Image (tube, rainbow, N blue to C red; front, side, top):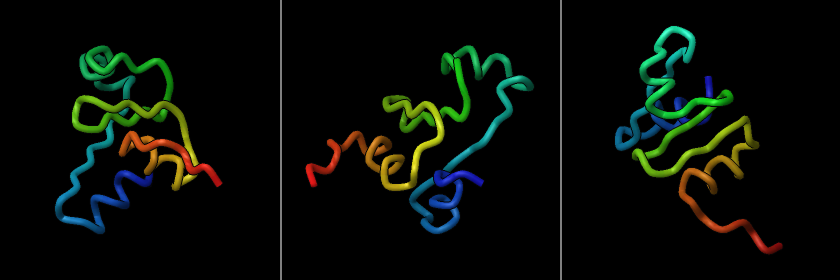
Length: 68
C-alpha cells in the first residue's frame, strides 16, 4: 500500500484510488502514465516514481525541498 493510500486511511479529508494502468487504459491515457507508480493530486500535481515518504509529501504539496 502506497503512502497516499495510508494517508487516506488515516485522514477522512484525504481520498485515494489505486488503479492498474494495464487494466484501465482510458485512465492511464488521460493521466499520461509513462511509469509507475504515478500519483496525481487534485488534477494538478503529478508525482512519478517511488519516493521516500518525506519527499513524496513534499512533492504532493508542491513544496520546495528542505535547505538543511
